[in-house]
Image (cartoon, rainbow, N blue to C red):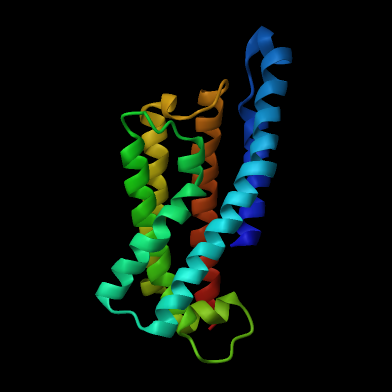
Length: 206
């Protein structure tokens, strides 16, 4: 998860560069947008994502150790989601007064629930594994099962991006909203292809 975060940040910077075509204002706009992205990547994205990973892992471990009934799962979601959302980029970069912010929050909650369900499955694996691919092949017995899980998670990401595309004013960004939204979409499409390809490779290694 940390490796994927690092790759996504690097990809985002490259895509920002390709989208920056602001005509005669290039010399003014480009440094501002790039500077904002670099500051966000260093100070917001990394710290927030690392905290989200830890929060999700803590929630998952609690369920594996103490039992995972529907009642316990729902209780853990209500306990841990506020902390998860506080560190989510949709919360940090979204205007909480915006009409679509509640859609942001609800999508983030569904994302967290889905992450948590998959994480519990992974944490329950007792067999010895050498890498993440081995872990996934044991936890999710077939490519079809893993693919359903992957596409569900990608759907949540898609929903979040569409909210921004519908009305970029939800972003608390002083300049370059359209550039960042375009880069966000391109990054998602490239990452989606990478994930699907990686899933095929994982299950072809059986």
